[in-house]
Length: 237
Image (tube, rainbow, N blue to C red; front, top):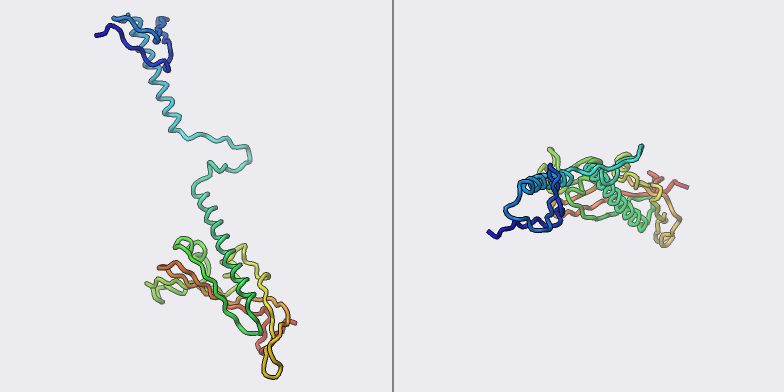
């Protein structure tokens, strides 16, 4: 035996005070054999350090309390995961439906209208989760159903009413932005058709086909003049 007891690292404190007010300087070797007072002081110091360590561990495992001003909503740090997920889902749906509607507007504008239906197509890819978010709660499911190809990997949904279209596009449903060019019908007597002016368009039907295997969705949009006539001519003027 070397005759001295090595002192603890200085980080833990240079001195410890026992119950009998005896100071022990840990920066210097403790004579051997140590006195009863020194042993008692070291025992108390060990207990003190153990209590401090337990307190530190407890602080690490206890969630920090956030201070919220009266009347203020929950902060981003304390927002429930479900609430954050719902906000993310809503943002995704808004972004995807805006993209779809903008593509429909662009494709529809490129067509010529003279009291006939036009079908424009829009294609996008969706994961299963995204497809369910965007299309799952709206429209009418045509396939797969219990009566129509229940095991099919191709999903078909239809949207025909204003209510169904509103439910699909949400805040991005802006039918007044659907514009196109009205053209006259050309023939051998009058020559080529002539552009007559801009007209308001109306979506009469949307069919969505989505492949579960490829993730590809095709929207077939039946669109024509809003005031088309059943007698073969435009009656909006």
